[in-house]
Structure formats: structure tokens, C-alpha cells
Image 1 (spheres, rainbow, N blue to C red):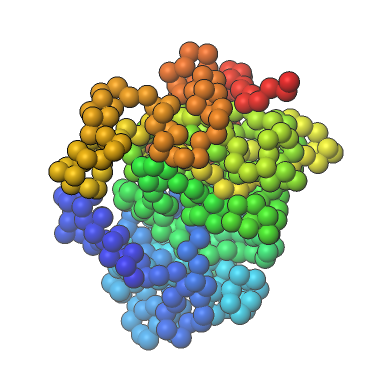
Image 2: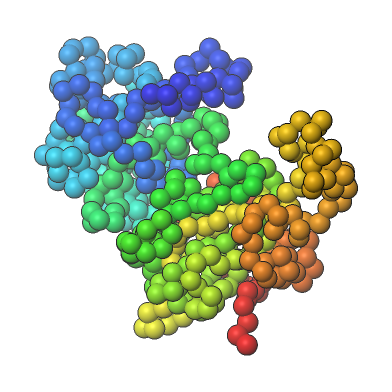
Amino acid sequence: MKKIYLASMLFALAIPSIASAQSFQYNPPGQLKAGSGTGRVDDTVFVPGMRYPIENAPSFPNSQVWGKGGLNGGGGGQCDSENYSYPWWDNFCETRSWTVPMCPGGTGHQGQDIRPATCEKNLHWAVAAEDGEITNIGTYTVTLVGESGTKHRYLHMEPSSLQVSVGSSVSRGDRLGRVSNSFGDTATTIHLHYDIFQTVAGVGQSYVPPYMSLVRSYEELIGMPAEPCGIIAEEGGIIDDDSKCFRLAGKTQFWRTLDGEGHGGRLYWTYAFTNANPSAWAQWDFEFAQGGKYRLDVYLTPSEATSTKTRYVVRHSGSMQELIVDLSEDNNGWRSLGEFEFAQGGTQSLSVYDNTGEDGDLQLKIPADAVRLTRTDLVIEPDMGTTEPMDMGSDPVDLGSDSQDMGGGSSPVDMGSTGGGSSQPDMNTGGSSQGGTPSTGSTTTTTCGGCATGRKNQEPSVPVELLVLGAGAFLMRRRKRS
Ligand SMILES: [Zn+2]
């Protein structure tokens, strides 16, 4: 509930000029219209970075059967203003006989019903949620399989309005057809039924709750800033694999879990293989409270860290850098990937990919576990002591005078070890000189075109970009075999 108010406040702040317009509000995921069944309480964004499936806002996901004008809607007509107003209502798992493993009772509505801006058919465009291919077109159903392997279905568009055919390649945001009420011989209400089908760890193949993916993509559509998954404090922090800032991507079924090992008692791992494109990858998203230089470490467990050419990509301060790392050595605990200059704010990340170029038959493993960021350039402010200035004079350490000097130039190297207390011996020299920062001449750092604005770079389109960048050959080996 708190989220709803926050969302509406942010919207009002972001677009003051239309403050009189309705502010976006949504009921929590899993809360269905009374009497319509039991929802799934799940705030997972199953398709991070997807495009909202209707071209323009506003738009109103809610129940067709339990809304005004619906069979169990208590009267009124489908065009009732209540159906065309916030807050949104989740209707995934609403009472139906379809088998849906992710619904509490094992059956239910497979997706989300969405009304367009107005109660007019064949006017509002449905658009591609992500890059992909149209794999099937039925009487009233269009199926898009995205690059991530996610299957998106769009139901009830006007058949004569379709812009795609089977085999069409589409880009995120491309028009597919107009939202209507097509339903075979009979008509339904004017709405888009949209659903998402994925392979889910521990569940198998299932329709998954689309609600929070819709919320997030809608917020992007109406210009609301993303709520950060978490904020890294000025001195650094750890993002483990249970954090909202961590996600598995691509063909996620290839990520296996190992319980009782790794940081925090669990890690994911997958096999390295040879292919131009990655199959599975993982990403840790970074949002920094403060910009600065941070050492970036990954947590390794020997049995699951055997690939010798693991590909990591660090996106930092509008730049992006690929690292090729031999995980077969120094793989018991924290392992440094170097030091990097990060900017305040988000759109920065670490990704790891499975297409290392190693033979799949070797069964070499790549882990995805915790990542640690440790600030290495923190300057101690003169007044940092909590004791009163009056007492400082008698302090045996004589903080006062030291601090005066420190303020000016300071050596980041000393700071790192003083502040963090956990620095690794070779870190400061190795990391910075081998190219952790863009300023180092010997390293090729490539500017990531859309990093500052586009979410796309964080999403499944990344690998394509990497292919291009890969030709630049900015390989880096943290540890040479002696
Ligand atoms: Zn539906």
C-alpha cells in the first residue's frame, strides 16, 4: 500500500504540469477483485526492461469478468468510468479452469487483462514487449517469443489491423495490432489479454505473474523514475543473489542452484560453452549513493568456479568494460575484478555470461553469487570524529593535524586500507594499473552509447552489443599463470 502512495507522489512531482490528471495507482500484486479467486502475491518483475504492451498511456489493467459490465461485475456497462480509472487490479490467477502451476490452486487466469485509454475498439495499438519473433498467429492470439526466450501472448486484437505475420522479426515497441474485442465467433470486452510464459526455477514451464512487469514498464512509459532495487552506501556494500539488485537472465533454466555453499548459503552456477551469443547470464545492478572509486569483488566457491575464460562486463560511469577472468585460480572466497570509477546513481552494473568460448563438454562452471563493492578513495573529513573539537587536542593520535593535511590531496591507496579494512594486498596496484579505470592508458574502455538514458543496455539486448564490442579486443586477464 505504501508503494501506491509513493508512486502517485513521484508522478505528481515528475510531471507537475499535468498534476490535475489522475495519478497512477495500483493495488498490490496478488490482490484480486473480491470473489474472483485467489491471486499470487509476487512482486517479481519477470521481464525486467520490457516495453508496456500498449503504446500509449493511460491504460487500465483490471478484471473483465468482475468489473462493471462483466458477467460477475454487478451491472453497469464495460465503458463505465470505474473500468477506466486507477487503481489497477491484478487478475492473474482469477478463477478459470486453465492449468497454471504458479497459481495458488494450480489453475486460473493465465495473464492480465488490460483496457486501453478509452472504451473504443480498433483504435489503440498493442506493441512488442521486447525484441523477438512472431511465432504463431491464431484466430485472436498473437505470440511473440523474445530474445530472452520469454513467450508473450496478445489476445483479442482486431485481426485486420495486424502489422505482423508468422516469422516477423519485431523490435521492442513495434506495433503489432489494435486492441479490440475479437474472440472467435463471439466478442469479448474491449481489452488486451497479455500473458508471459517462462521456465521458472523450481516450478518448470508456466505462465508467470505479469503484474509487476506491467507496473514497472508502465512507470517507464509515463516517465516515472525507477525505484532503485537498493542503494549502495558511500563506503560500499554487498549484493548477494537474493537481492532485488541481482537477476538471472536469458535462458534462466540453465542456471542451477547450489544450496549450503557460497556467500549467504546459496549460489547459482551454469556451464561455460561456445557460441556467438550467451545463453544464460546474470546481472547485478548498482545504484550508488555517492560516486567514487570502488573495488569490485565477486564471491567464488572452488567447485563451481572452474571456467578459465569467464566473461564479465562492468558498466560504470557511462563506460563499459569487458573482463576475461580465469576463475580456476584464487577461487575460494572474494576475488577482485579491479577498481572502477562509479558515478552517483544507477544504470551501472556487473554482468557475467556463459559463452566463454570453452568447450561445453569440459563442463567448466561459472558461478553467480554475491558481489562486493568497497570504496577505495574515501577521504576522511577533518570533522569526522564524533568527539567534540575541544577534546580533540588531547587525542593521542592527533587526528586534528593529520586531517588538515589529508583534506588537500590524500592518497587513495592508504585510504582504501584504512577505511575498508578488508583490502586484498594486490588490489590497489593491480586493480588500478591494469585498467580498472577509464583514465588508464593501457586499457581499452568503450563508451556505451545508450548507457546514460536507455534501459535497453541492461536488458537482453546487451549480448548483441557485446558482439560488436568484442571485436575491439579489450581482453584483460587479472591473473597470469606463472
Ligand atoms: Zn484474459
